[in-house]
Amino acid sequence: MKNGFTIIEITISIFVLSIAIIGIFNVLSIMVILTSDAADRLVATYLAQEGMEIVRNIRDTNWLTMDAYPDSGYAWDDGLDCEQGCEAYYKTGTGDTGEFPMYPWTNGGRKLKINTSGFYEYDVAEPDTKFKRKIIITQVEDVDHLLNHIIKVTVQVSWDKRATVLSVSYPAGDYQTTGNCDPHNCIVSEATLYNWYPASVAP
Image 1 (tube, helix red, strand yellow):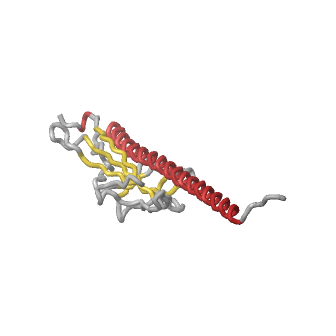
Image 2 (cartoon, rainbow, N blue to C red):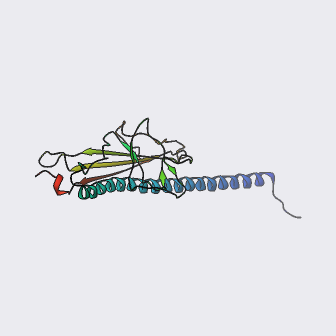
Image 3 (cartoon, one colour):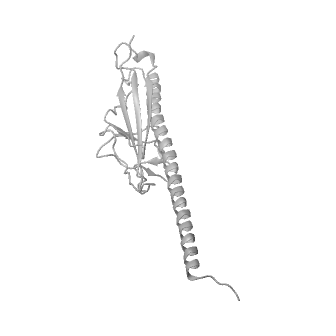
């Protein structure tokens, strides 16, 4: 006489297999979410570093202009009036003049786009990415209480985070008004830049 499985045994086996499959699926889902989040943070970190380099390049270009045209009235911080925040990107298109445009941050800022060369900017006919970048520049007093050769640069990069382990969405936003950068979907980079150009540094 052959022994077979009873209905109860089959039911229990199906239940155990179902629990195992659901568990594996949940683990895989969490891994996908965490991997996507790590990739977003990496891109945001590079965008924050690029924002800092844009400011440095503007400062260095101003120095070169002051050297070439000493009586032109140029200042080392021309184009860096971003106390209320700016958007900025490298000019990489045809006819690049070497300028690094910075535009006032308005209406919560715009999302960056990716051009055909793979660079992030705003003025291209491409869909929005999930990233916003805000550059804030403030004057810093030196030991003599002067405000002519030290600036503090803060770059905030935020992104839309639609899926999380806790199933909470975090939209990219303007964190200057709240005084806070949500760690779930915002990277902050800060640096202090100096003007070492002798002619414009007060004695």
